[in-house]
Image 1 (cartoon, helix red, strand yellow):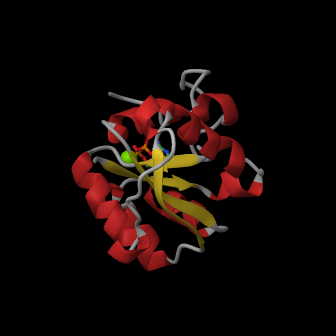
Image 2 (spheres, helix red, strand yellow):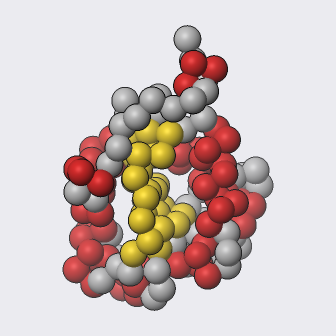
Image 3 (cartoon, protein in one colour):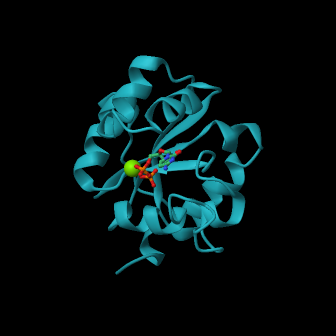
Length: 149
Ligand code: CDP
Ligand code: MG
């Protein structure tokens, strides 16, 4: 089953949006495979955003995710990488669909609440940055049989 890496950024934690955002994923029918509250250090922040090294927003974005604890999660489900990106909405909350998480809760690209992997390859890389394999759990969940045939 496909997995993706989701991070609730410092603004989501500080603004008390953690439970509400997690509900979007739970209610969609996705399955939580791992979760922890962590303080991201510079090594991890730079590795997370390695693809953006050299861009103007790299350093501010690294500082942003180091600024306060984040909730790191792995969600599992059919086509979850694309699905999670749709639930999140566009990178800039100002342009995000108003029904999406960024569209509902954010206003500015520099405080956009949530991260989600952009491909299956990125998901594998990001999951291994934040989680050891023994921290991820695959389990039968009540209700699975009501979500697909
Ligand atoms: O997070 P997402 O994959 O949607 O966007 P990205 O293009 O990979 O950029 C990574 C993160 O950098 C964004 O989520 C923003 O937090 C930040 N960013 C920014 O502050 N200003 C920009 N012009 C572009 C990105
Ligand atoms: Mg990205």
